[in-house]
Length: 437
Image 1 (spheres, rainbow, N blue to C red):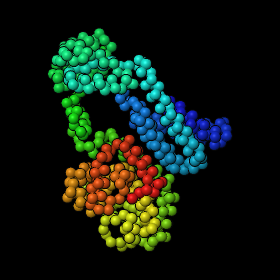
Image 2 (cartoon, rainbow, N blue to C red; image 1 turned 30 degrees about the horizontal axis):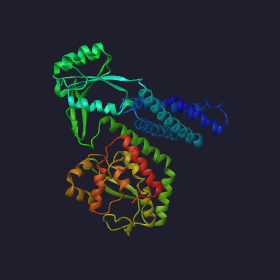
Image 3 (cartoon, rainbow, N blue to C red; image 1 turned 60 degrees about the horizontal axis):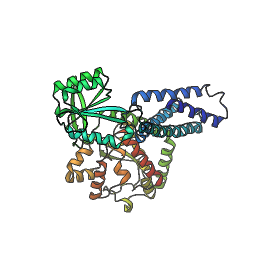
Image 4 (cartoon, rainbow, N blue to C red; image 1 turned 120 degrees about the vertical axis):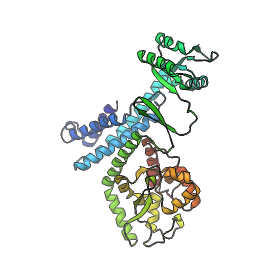
């Protein structure tokens, strides 16, 4: 459906822009259409945006994944046009294509999820499950599915030691016979109650019946993430702090950083030049301000900004709006965040990410190391970002209290492409509203 809507949007925008369809499949438009389709297919295979569990299959999850694919696809097409110098393509045609596609793709997802929920509420598209072991966990699971009938899950019984449990069907030894005689889609097993031999018998029988086995772990109350890695066939759970993230997510985040920063630098170069000229004309001194900051795992790097302060200003922490070192133009750049634009080069070379905790200056490090050392260690365990939750919610910090408050906000960040897109849109809102501090 996405491929159909993508091509439909392209054709509708072409007709609106050119008033005919005779040449829509003629060169160079056929090449551009091929890039549109090819890029979407490649991204679909890499990102796998159409793989969902029943719990994840909601409007918000679908829209977030669509938005991720949509943005990266737009960046790829922009890079293609820039690399091939295809400036003869109409910008209006491209903007309309993406505008129509976004509306149609988003609407389709909302309608599909709504229709599927109604379909399940009428008793169709249901899946049957049983729970083996873990009485309390079985009750919690069944209550969850009872509260969400739109997920279409039918509970067929509990197997274990507690014979008083609702829908008790027998002991562990009765599970194999039950799944052989009933249509079971999922078996939820609580590992704490099962020995290896019994679990293997259930798992082997499940494979023969094309039934999926899911494990209910003992680690329900652990607030941070558990990551799984395999040593040959042995699954090993790694207990990770909140700020660490999986290799696949980190890879996607880096790919997104490269595509996004490249697109901004290429397409925004006229704006960069204009800001540089205004900075030079409004106050004497260099256009670009450089400073050493602390990056990933405490490694120092040079950060780039459009200069917002007077030359040879006293080296001390910013005092915000009342700081007399900041030029008039500098105040505007800080409110709109455009002084940060050169940091897209930091992102491109890998010192920073688009989204992450703000890179720490010397004064910030002294405060955090002294007053919240654990928070400091967690902050530097993630690559610093051009924007962050703390930057959009709080803004610049001018004293020790504000530094700690912003750091606590940044500590809530969980690196992921979905979270990054959300923060990017918040940042865009701050830029256009000129509401930055």
